[in-house]
Length: 61
Image (cartoon, rainbow, N blue to C red; front, side, top):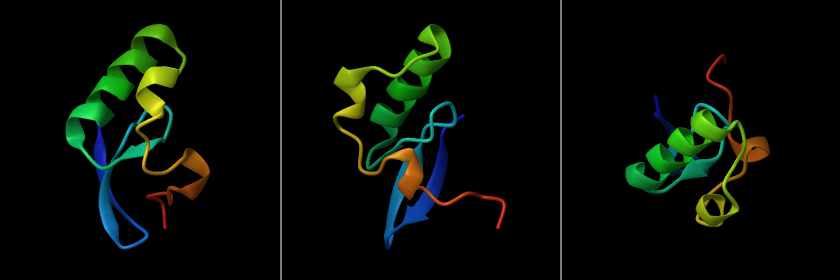
């Protein structure tokens, strides 16, 4: 399930499979569906990313 996170002062939706963040929910859902189905990221989808996984804070702290 896509999660909502505040990143760099903005609210973004994060793919739970790969950790890539997007400004819109629909793209994050498409990313998550693709990642879950293919066990890989789609270059066509992640080109719309707002933040890469290394920029997304963990939810554990």
